[in-house]
Image 1: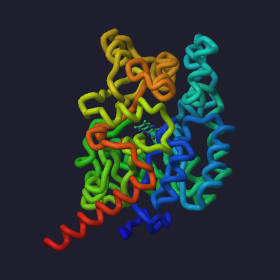
Image 2 (image 1 turned 90 degrees about the vertical axis):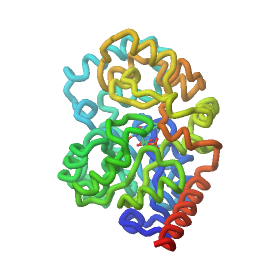
Image 3 (image 1 turned 180 degrees about the vertical axis):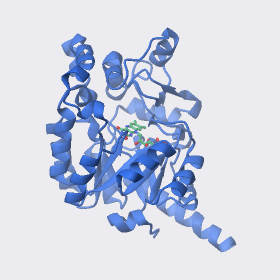
Length: 350
Ligand SMILES: Cc1cc2nc3c(=O)[nH]c(=O)nc-3n(C[C@H](O)[C@H](O)[C@H](O)COP(=O)(O)O)c2cc1C
């Protein structure tokens, strides 16, 4: 058994968390990971408040183990200032109703008040942890404190780690450039120890971790655990078309690219006809979150229809390490067992 500040604080068997991947990480995946002894994280940003409430209820019905929810709380999403929302609403209103209906997974990010609704649902449900990406507002941390919810900040740079640490979060996820989804500029191997040196909070490693070797390496760097996304796409419990999962199995790191074309922020996904056309056009992105409306149905086409040329399929360089679809609980157990074997063998040599 590997004991770290993460396992001790949250009562986990293993220091392994599945990432709160929008769309991909729904209740089935969270339940499987948490029941296996890791901590599953719901991709909360995908859901309008009522659906979010339902998903959390499904998690509670499926497990009594710790679980987390991911939210994005930058000012651009929490503001009630109508003028700030105007450009985003214009893009949204320009869409055909059929296209809007197919943007279910990002509707909350394009609708004034929806993120405030998500916050209400999450605070009411009081999960064991909330994982915040992009921003760690004081008001939200205070609300979590009052309810005994641990706050985890997901960051991609030393500067953001310092900000989150100063805001008083409980844990920091240091996410390297290799990662799938929104990502920064610094590799995991560099970022994790740099952040460990800079903050007092326990740090989890993310980006490029897909097996027990990655977990053992992260623990050797001083991390309190790992935060894993891409590996869990290739599980039966992950949401997404089978062609997306097969793309992960067949994919190589060089097939992924960093693109602003989907969300307006740097995002690692499989390169395809849309990302290439966007880069070639030289168009300026509409910024976050408006670019989701510009990318429109392409955001969902990958997950729903499995069309990797037309649709968004975020994935990290770890696709190089993923060769089979594996039940999420087995991914957790295999990763832990392999890491334990490696660390034991290294200790024997010492
Ligand atoms: C399909 C996909 C969707 C993601 N969606 C989110 C998200 O909604 N919120 C978030 O904070 N991170 C998101 N991420 C990033 C993950 O939280 C995580 O940091 C990353 O997957 C770790 O790197 P790895 O993919 O190499 O394991 C996403 C990643 C992927 C692959």
